[in-house]
Length: 422
Image (cartoon, rainbow, N blue to C red):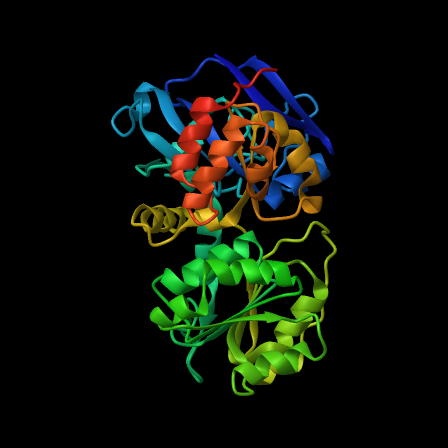
């Protein structure tokens, strides 16, 4: 079976190429991929190559397919799995397989036949054995692609813990009805976290989102307004912390007290130091954003760790239950992952997008694997529509959906865009 895919051969060596997949085994599944959203983790893997902990050492001879936030359709099922899966079903994959003894291996990092930037893949037996192939019944492929990053957010919220003084029992999750602040929270993953904090099973009383980019804060507020948050029982504030005394400003919002839960959504040491200062008694600091540098240190107040019960957690990805919850909440339209998407492109834009990701402004970049199209901001559709009827119609569709990507836009693009050629 021929496929077109983006493969990683070494540090900063991504290649879009066409090749033959091996014959599918009786314990494997053949599938296509329609959409893949680009994660900063893929950029880190591309930059580090074999030095990345999830990437095999022999990629120069046995390259891996990059990308782990994808959705497609099952095409053929090996006889071992025919009792559970069948052709025509839409699916998503939880890349955190958590195989004993191979804990760091994951689709999009570690495998030769499965990764998000491909037209067709072979799903190895390990994915099904670990119950990480999840069926999806939604109306758009991009939603299931984004279920992976949403599951990371859900996993981070679930990883939080608190305890009663004098007891050694951890209560998992953010404090229901507590005070929550998300530092650097106006980016794409921050928007997903706001969505989940407002519409998930545990809601804070106070939710504060900080950033130093006022344009991003304004966009976040246009998508999740304080008025809507009040309807959900949450006091939502957007705060620009680029001025003087950000700690004093943030504590004053919470009547001078510290916060129960503090999330850090950018790998910046000064933010970790701020987070340490913002924690209240028994507060939990979640370092959500993974750094590229392996030697990454930041100051934390260990006096407060000892006397005020401050503690730190980190999570890299969600588990299968987190992803199931993400798919369920999106299927019931309680979460809208389209708020994370700011750019859309074809597979021929994938190499440049992954390589240049930190320098490309905006939120999530969504790739459709079967089409040819530059990575394009949604905000540029109207301008490009002056000379291109496809962009003109996409501009009309996105305007009907409050400027957001949608199932309607996806369907139109897939049926009208130029097909991918290598």
